[in-house]
Length: 104
Length: 443
Image (cartoon, rainbow over all chains, first blue to last red; front, side, top):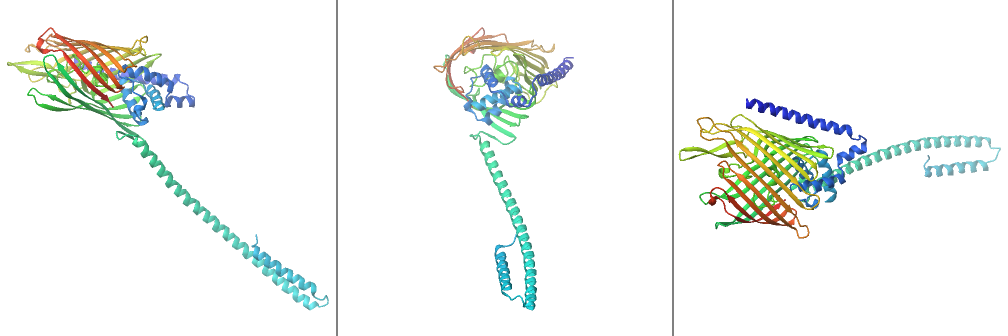
């Protein structure tokens, strides 16, 4: 019995999460201004928002690294690693990356 | 357009003829007729020469046009070669990234990160030694913003029960991370347990504020995990979702689950603990399911709740048993005191009772800790204080006060000095106070 419950729980959890993330994605798309400039800015990342996120997020686990410690390409990979570790959204990642690459 | 030399020649001839005609007597009608014929003949020759000249000019124009187009195409081809060379040079320069440990092409990039530490321990029971510490390179290889490979290896040396030094090599984790959308990533492979915070995020020595793990959060005898699982092999869905000004992060996973470690003592088989480092295959065909939900009502406050349920695979003498883990964790950085951070974690593991023929009853492992650290930016110093408790499956409780002082050479190079006051309600010989030194480097 416990095995079946686990499998059902598993499938339901994954399905719910996928739906939730998809819903969040579509809600975000609907609420955002779709003018070309804003979309480009959104994809590129926002420096100010990135600086705030960098200050608040990184320190939750470790000392804040100097942006000059890594090159643009290295930050590009490192921030993807941190996206997975810290539960960041894709937009958070782009914002922080914009800040780090402009500050190194 | 008539050629200038030809035009001048014709002019001279025409002028000579006209002069000759003008000087002839008007009565010489026959001569006049002859001259008229000559004139007409010359006129005809002139027209023929003009036609030839036009033809020649047309041919020259054609040849010039052909030559221009040939030169243009040749220059364009040469330019294309130079552009390609420049692009290749730029790509090579970008690829070097200023480091041999990283590189990039148009679509892919890689980076070797990681951490290392060395240390010294002096216990009050007389045992003191330098230790080789650990070296843990982490490989990142990413294809666009679609997929990333992450793999952490761990190298270290330990002294076994016979006093021999053994080099340990281990894959801490190896996952392929598929970025499904902005709010979800599929993480598949061998991963660190998302139960709580310490195992997945705080264990690297350049991150951990003290030289040791909180008691109950590491591995015990025979590699058995203590109160908290270490990892699993399976698949996770992870991500973050903003909710107005608040944030939620999540991780749910399914994996092969743990296995029971049992040893024979005086003819009886006893459970030593659980191997939760990630079994390469599902030994009992029963998957583990678990996850963590983190809630950030404020940017400087995170509260997390974790749970895991599975059926731990038994041995020849021990049957499969229910396995459940619950945990809570928090992080808080009070805004009114800069550089002060507080964190804590609680975790409880339960292993169900065996069948009626097995004597072992239900077992529990329970641990928690609280930690405060304050960074004095002016002096690069960071005092740390941690208190932890751990109750093992035999009901023995250990407590630990661990004050320490760190010096930051930089944000990723930290020298740590600490002292552990260890106590127990069980056998006093099992614990001793320790002085610890460690130098840690995150790269």
